Image (cartoon, rainbow, N blue to C red):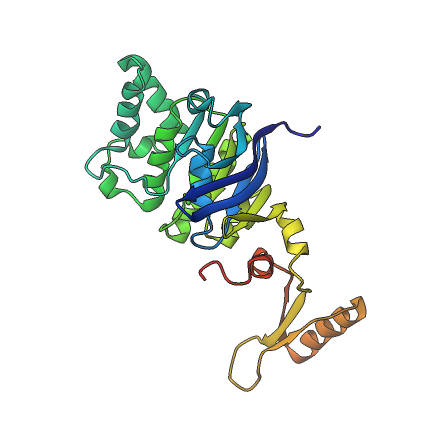
Length: 293
């Protein structure tokens, strides 16, 4: 059975004077999935996320979130979603517990309920053992968990994450990845923007690639790879580089050629690495450059 659509955007545009930040974006996000939005710097990813989270009004087009219109029913949407903006940072001299507890109080909970909800969230996020530590004494990954915890004080169906792992070390990024997977298993739908190809490839059930304010691809990661225009490559190199052999990159076209390459590797004691088309290959093919460019 196909999961219901929680979010849909049709022809979303956003203009600042004559400058078009978004020039016609379409996407569809289904329940209990991770939907990733990727694109070059300045492509309009954050602008799109802010429109869908009702923080900006679109100049044209239409979008619905949880069945509500983002313009005429913005208040209803805000009560049902959670948002973690790219620039969000914890207060360094506040404890992990107090970040979430005070946010519960601000949201109108009693002290008793706020303490109970804070404990519940910190247990889910693996933060309870760090509850009395200042944010300044925590790793980047743990600080990001605090920010996500503050966004989750109310049960929500839909969570917006804008570049949630930017600036984190590899361990911190993996920690946030695991957290996102855990949330989707509990029924939370996640829409995230990211600069990292490996992040989108690891997490995304569906994908939108945006370039210059327009949607250039919608589909799954595997479907994106199929558009890359790149065949599987095989890299042959010494097991231990000694400078006597150059690295070879081959493109086998038949199973027999693959078998011959593997047999050569075994016979000559060479390292043989298969490199299928990647999401980065697809990105370069669709956008015409790397994500940094």
